[in-house]
Length: 182
Image 1: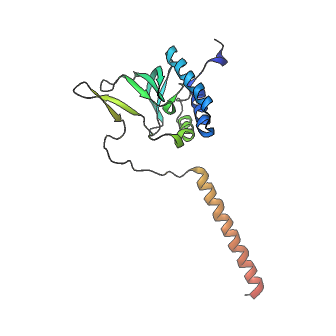
Image 2: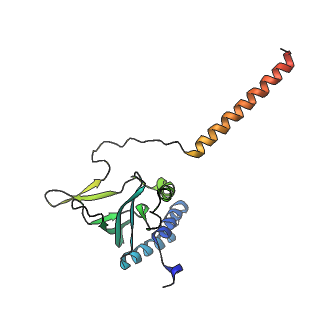
Image 3: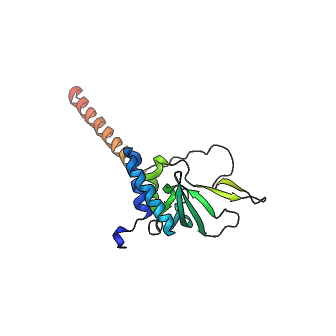
């Protein structure tokens, strides 16, 4: 198969975002077909952790059903984790995308409006051998505290706003000096 015809997770994730923004059901069907194809081929990629800005697992895709990708956790091996997981496409990335934390931040900024958790919920095996759902970063049932980070564009906007207000103040001061001659 020619290199340009090989479907990758990145292409499917971008199509999913476009389909959700545009409400395009036909494009969603194409994404689902692509994910099934990747699962049939045993495509390998990374599971991203957006809190840590890194790949948390290397996975092999097995299939797709009901809005989730079935995957097998390959590395690192964690005996307490169920090997088979149902994962959202939004948390998957090709190997070359997961090499750089800046790429992961870019991916997160594009999928953030559509995800509920920065770390995907994973199934963990308990002492009885049963699986249970685990949010890897917090095992407590308490509502997560939202942290707000200053974005560089907001900082620049605030600086420009302050400069603009300062110039208006200087202009008004100059006008007052001319009127009252103080």
